[in-house]
Image (cartoon, rainbow, N blue to C red; front, side, top):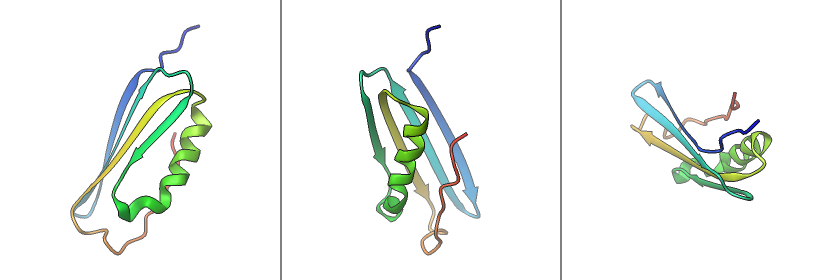
Length: 84
């Protein structure tokens, strides 16, 4: 059975007046190539995002983009729950 390695997904979460958007794009690639772009304030969870992605993918180019709109989470810690 052939499985497609090309895909796109987006999820938006609202916490108060703050919106967090996570977009994931994947394309076929011989090796696993992860690229994560996010605000500097979230760099402490970058390795956890990579670990989650590695648990699902063994190859392909994966681009993860995280954006935050609003200032409500400036002093709040965020926790990565998991990818399902």
